[in-house]
Length: 87
Image (cartoon, rainbow, N blue to C red):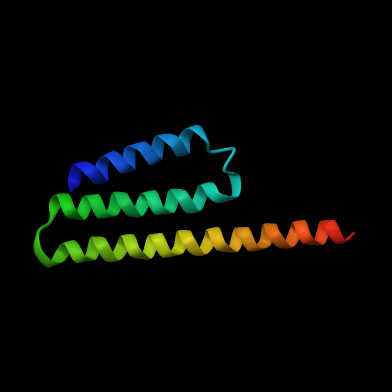
């Protein structure tokens, strides 16, 4: 489990580094989700038992915040395109 999470974190971080400017409004929410994965990996690596649930809970919070930000950015982008096409 640790190795899989570590590989996902490393791959997603490297892809985010290479595409930081191209992903502009969405780069920060993706970085928040990756930070949540790092938090999860930290708790799974250094703790055992019920304390690991704290890592899962922290990741879920980071994931939800990232998804909410992505949805907000998409809605604002859609409204800007719609507003620009009306004028």
